Length: 53
Image (cartoon, rainbow, N blue to C red; front, top):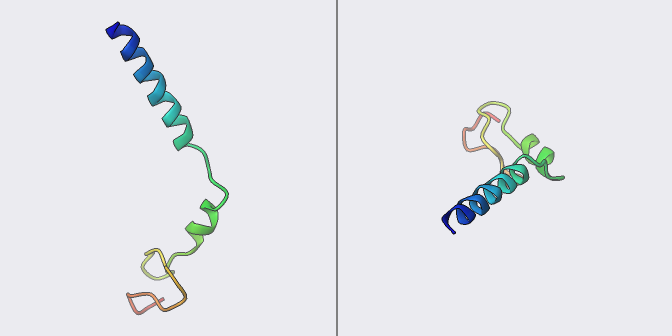
């Protein structure tokens, strides 16, 4: 019984690891939305809080 539970848990962790490696369609667009000066993610159209970008 305990072996079955542990096996199912490990299989579940393996499936989650595979999904974690997937690249989602919007991921590239999110990485481009960063400040060129400090590298912080930019939200919205206003200037970066660092004041340089």
